[in-house]
Length: 146
Image (tube, rainbow, N blue to C red):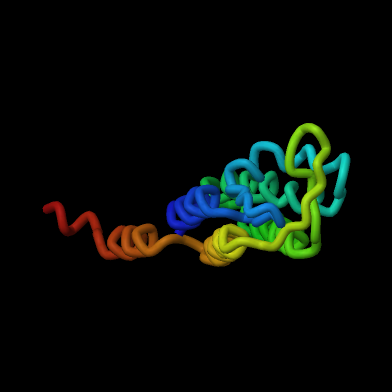
């Protein structure tokens, strides 16, 4: 589930997240790289951009199986921050400070879906292969090797 979430996140980066009034589209990758710049125009987008940081922290926690509660809390905060992406009606479109009215693209929905997958992953105590391995480990006894 962790790998699927990362693949969905990468796919979301390739999709347009915003369309400007001038017909330009802005990919998730560009939003990921320069989203922090929105602090100077629209702090709501800047705060929403922090959802990516929480996603990456949750990804790291996902590798360590003992951090379930922390992982779920981190990804829930990231999920709520990601919902802020729907609020802005305009944002700075270039380094010159040009402001453009925007509408949300499909990439935002896919991006938020990656957060949901990460949250579901955090709620699962262990993956299926780990469960099967633990069950097989219980079945094997010393008598099997005599």
